[in-house]
Image (cartoon, rainbow, N blue to C red; front, side):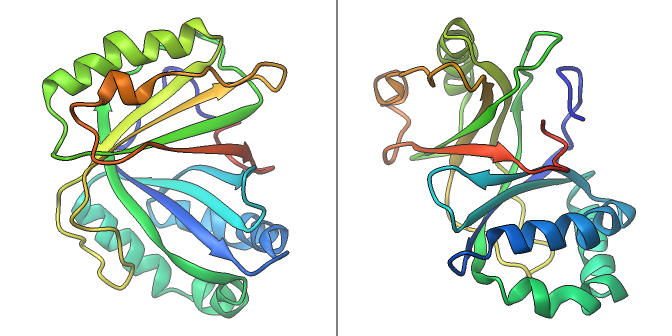
Length: 223
């Protein structure tokens, strides 16, 4: 389980899969039964798997790596190994698209309470005009995250684009984009706080933020 003191890995993938209608539970069951632990055995950190509450045919998950060279080796070991070979056809049969992938890194440390909130996780993706600068990070730290916490949500992480070249081109990532991503948890009996993100971050934003409301799957680390 991830806690407030967990140190995030330096390289993180945020993966959003579009699935064939009605097949998300099938993929989650297969993923958590057959594919979760073997990826960790290859050196990856499975940070969380989620149902998208706004789209019944979207599966969202995050995994981390100790660095870009380690990412290349871990992915080569897993996708070239017997476990993926045995289950890839069944997994791929559930998917329409698996290429919506953001390659990220931690943007700043997030001070959170000792007890994380339960319920749903909200992921906010902000398209940026340029790579994040210190002024943007300060606005997140001193402006956005305190408002999130004051509204009863628990900030979990702030991430930004990892600019390194994709070291495993067999798995595409979204290139030529700059984003800022933050995640927070909120109890089911509390509404998600309405924040004027556009107003707070207008000088940096290229487009309107995208907000994903997520529910952790049974074996997700982020519960």
